[in-house]
Length: 293
Image (cartoon, rainbow, N blue to C red; front, side, top):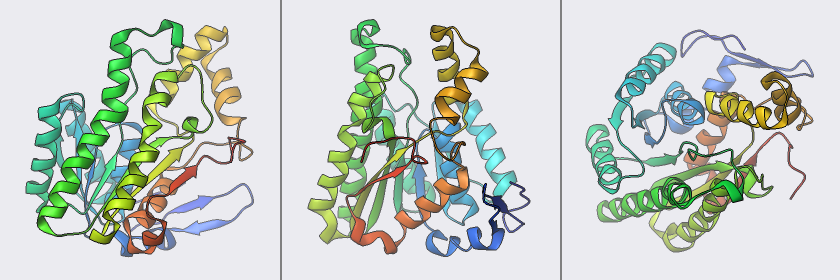
């Protein structure tokens, strides 16, 4: 992929030689241009990709992290890549007061919110097996993957109802919810509830113009993914490079990881009114790496 400025030239070349031009990707900006979006855990990895691509497509984005240093670095990178400067909010998703302040500050700094894209980091002990997990590990998994998104959704929906405005929630999860990976048993068990949460939001609040979706993601090339694979490789007695090839690249018929633009395109669609009749749905973005349906 070659890239320039936000309005510059983009090409995505598939293994079959097809070329998608910049104008076609950036045209998706018509779906989200000017939308006010809060993206959590968005200074590294998948959350960063989501925030950057939404900003590239013209959304007004608020990013969040526990680390002020990471916030400053991510904000600079998003501004440089897209020409859009995000709002930065320091918040720890395992702390109730931080979650409450995050919604309040994002709403105030952006002048309201149209959408929440929830992402979170890894459980500290993972990759780890069930017999290796302690009580505190389970508490962290629940805080990160169930309590934080659930409470954020409660606060966001309450605010939308109070101001009589529509809104969208997208929970970024993992395809391992459908195809469990034993070394991620804590996260997979906790985040499985997001599918129920999104459907419940859709059932109760569709008539209020509020929508929710769960996206089950496959592999992206991120620092977190590389770190996890390196730790798994050590357990298996192989090099990180071999583990990445065997456990990430070769498990999908596409023989590659997902591209940030593919996530950006999906989010643009879900945040737009075009996806209204899919309210409550669970979508899979995994390059056919899982055999389950």
